[in-house]
Length: 252
Image 1 (spheres, one colour):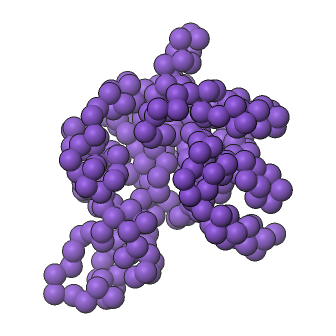
Image 2 (spheres, helix red, strand yellow; image 1 turned 90 degrees about the vertical axis):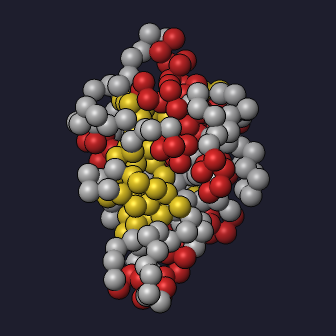
C-alpha cells in the first residue's frame, strides 16, 4: 500500500501568526510533526503543504520536503488534495493519503498506524480517530468535537455539543452513565475519495457546526473511527504553546 502523508501548515493564523515556526523545546512546531511521520517505514512519502516560503525554507533546513500550495484553500483537506494532484503529476501513485495536523507536535506514530490499518478493509473510504472523554468540563467544551458511531465503528455524527443527550440525567452525571468520545482530528482518505470530497460544496450541517467532516457524511461518505488512548495537544494560541512546553518539560 502506497501512503502519502500531507502536513498542512499555514503561516497566517489569525490567533497565532507564524505558528508552524514557533519554537517548542528549541525546535519549530512543524519539525516535531515532521519527525513523527518521517520515521515511519510504512509511509511512502511525506510533504509539508504550505502557502508561505518561510515555512518551505524552514522545512528544507531540517531535511524535510515542503510544497507551495494555493493561499485560497479553505481547509487542510483542500491542501492535501492539491498535493496529491501534484505528486501524481510527477508519476507517483498512492492508495491512501493521511492529513496530519501541522499544529499537533505530539502526534504518535501508533495513531497513524491505526489509521493505516483501517484500510485493510477495502470498503473504508475515510478514517479518523476518537478518544474517551474523562471530565464534564471536557464534555461541555465546544472546542472539543464529540463523535458518536454505529455498531460497525463508523461515524454517525460529529458535534460541538455533547452527544448523545441523556434525558432525565443531570449533565454532571452523564459520564457515569455512558461513554463519550472526543474526535482526534487526524484523517486518512482513500486517494480516490479525497479527490471526490475536495470537489464538494459546503453543506448545511457543516456550516451549522463549522465541521467539514459533516459535509462528507451529508454526501454519503462513510468515516471509519478508530480509538486511541491519547488526546493530542493542538496549538492554536501562544497560551497553548506555553502549555505544550510545560507538558514537554514534565516528560523529561
